[in-house]
Image 1 (cartoon, rainbow, N blue to C red):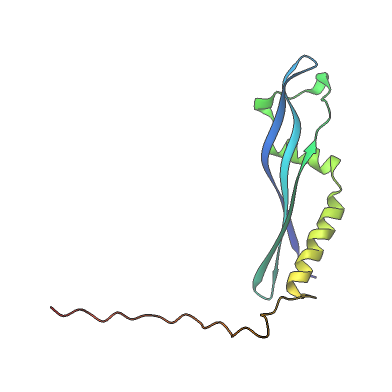
Image 2 (image 1 turned 90 degrees about the vertical axis):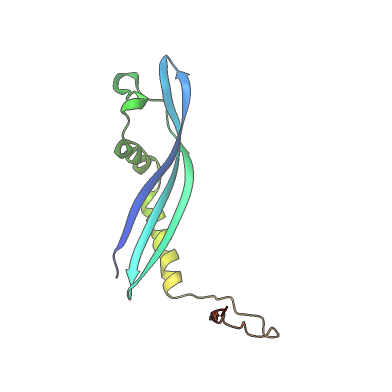
Amino acid sequence: MATTLFSWTISELNCAVESEGLPDVINVIHWRYNATQEHDGKVYFADTYGSSNVAQPNPQNFIPYADVTEAEVIGWLNEILPVEDMQAGLEANIALQITPKEVTLPLPWSPAPVPPTSIVEEPVLT
């Protein structure tokens, strides 16, 4: 089986201005989880997106907003989301792209589309 590469994209963090005496507390993470796989020289892509609520942090190990890293946010997502199920779904999506079970065909009564032709302009003689 081909290797599927997974990656996170964090697009936005919502914060409570103040929560239980702590400033700028992250409470919602907006994310995308991406999968790519190469098969027979072609790269296939699938992704899922969502937003996830984050629990109130423990004041003893609170990280100020300016010091939060992408790796820490991804770690939080890995703890709160069913990542293995998400990976299985993305791999199934890619498998269907590689070997589709359903296709959309042109309407049988419509004429076949005419491929565009290249237009060669002749020089204008003056």
